[in-house]
Length: 391
Image (tube, rainbow, N blue to C red):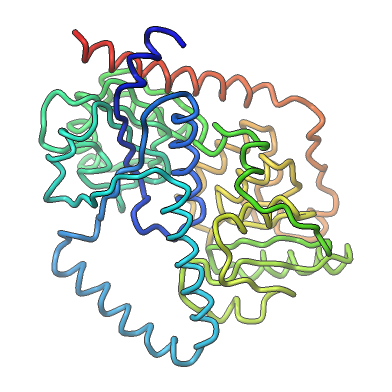
């Protein structure tokens, strides 16, 4: 271990992302990955428990309570399904508590200044921490305290552009960053003109761990059947029908994680041969690992398909173009853009049947180069912060 490594081993790194009380598979797994990658490098790192809901406006609070009230009627109607969803939520809590190092204290918007006393270096990211609809002072590391060490790792805007007002806010927040990196190529072009340092395009944290490291997360069980795995966050019926047609024509079952947003909806009620509403984060990884084919509209389901060398198709989520940049960036990196069904002519069974399979026997040089550069960026950024702190 080098002198720089010895220095950082004694320092605390606080990571802030969509972690606290998260029930999102991708969000929780990327939080796990970044934390454990750093700890495996000998760094004292943990997730900061930040409750974004605490301290929100009355309007926001009232809206959430109203949605909970409306959900009560569904919970009565679909009692057994919601029992499974609650089991899933408990499984998420168990995974966060047992698998991801995190702060004992839960911070809020009102207590952000206290964080300056807890950690020497702060990292924001990954996931959509910088999406304009989700960003807040905490995710921008804007604690109202001077001279703290700030780094972004794979922070995602998940949009193709920002308004002038949004750019002004980001420019002010980024002024004292030591290092800035983003998850999408488009975000580099958006932020570089307003950033004080070079903006780096890096891989999502899940790619910092290799396939063998992810296999340790799951319980290896004998696979009794061959199946297509479906994970859809949007409501696209056509994508689901394509998955069922593919499974039928290839003598496969359809397994899906149902109601991932925590609410029962009609388009998933009778979908697939096995609809799983209580899957844990470990189950999510395991279901992708065991699949013959993956159909999804999720960035992280696509990422794990690549990690486990699976054939897959990824679809636009409810045809929202603002969601495309992260998927386009990842697809281009691996040279699999034709597996992104983002146009109507790709939404046919003939297209799927004639699609070239992904050849995982070849080396993905662009990805490997970027992964190496991403790791170097992350470790160098942290060590530079520590050296400056020693001056």
